[in-house]
Length: 377
Ligand code: NDP
Ligand code: GDR
Image 1 (cartoon, rainbow, N blue to C red):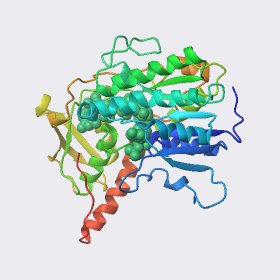
Image 2: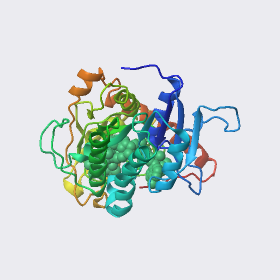
Image 3: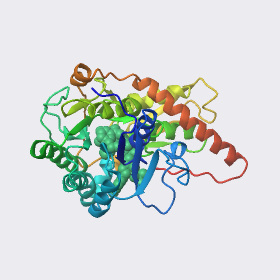
Image 4: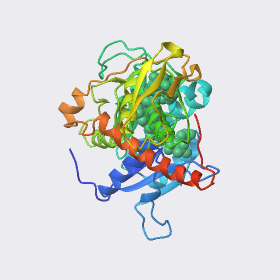
């Protein structure tokens, strides 16, 4: 395995997202010149990387951003021809499973054909021998699971337009490896989270929602399927693995997971406990609620025993649900020496602490009569 990264050039699609921001930090620390593709938006969308983005007017900044979109072939080809990267990390995607039911065609275009456009650009530009390609594949490919735990050989059964689009991207990556000898591989990543997780994914929705409730900014958190089981890891651990996968002698596909699963309900209990709130769940199905039993900490300034602070809202149920996911990371451990370092409980504590900081700031502003941005989802 090669660890000599000085002078190497990486291109990251989705650099403004959760994983892209951690991966950019990781690669910069290793001495890479990092290029990222960001979308044009009507307001700033680089919050997650602002802390590592240097003044573009300075000489040779190590992080360079290019406007672009995974739906735009000529744009991707031009960026690739300018950058001529040693490594491409294709992390860009419409990544929300529930949203993919609302925007299936767009999701197919960006998440499925986006990977093809990049691979074709590599081929068209004659970069097959130079450029290594990482595809952000997903445990959602397993969907209706055929085997537990899920490993590299487990058959796929996608359950959403998102997962079906990612299935295409998975196989086109394998196909370009087999057909053209491109070093191209799939990381089949199970759910990974962090304080930088998008606000509408379940863990962040819970940590942010409960932190807001504890500070009197919201009164109730409305959730979907509380029985859903996920294998949650920390994004920082998972981007290390994305890089490792591109440093091998031979390209292979790997499952990245912790090997432990918990329910959404359990995650809510942990997050509440971090805030000093003891919750108890009662009722069934759409009538299930979580009631405050005790408040042990000053963090929960506005919550009282007896308050119902979590309710189920069928609005968040999906037309087809992935009920359970549990990964087997044995191949990653044995071949790459990878083991996750941050537990899901530690990650939950980190996310709550971060969201609580913001909630306190907003509560203070509200107290002084200023409006605060509380976007409910
Ligand atoms: P995020 O949603 O946080 O980030 C997605 C990124 O893709 C953002 O930078 C977004 O830009 C960008 N993007 C969206 N649409 C386009 C487009 N049309 N063209 C170019 N870029 C686009 O996702 P994560 O960081 O959590 O995930 C990274 C990748 O890994 C995704 O492909 C996801 O599907 C996959 N994955 C994620 C897992 C997880 O648990 N996090 C697990 C398995 C796979 P903008 O900031 O402008 O919205
Ligand atoms: P997922 O993540 O669909 O697994 O996709 P998400 O956090 O959205 O959902 C996980 C599970 O929680 C259930 N759930 C809710 N989900 C959301 N978002 N909001 C709710 O209110 C809610 N209540 C219960 C869901 O039904 C689901 O079962 C993520 C994304 O990052 C994908 O891009 C990635 O490929 C997979 O993880 C692995």
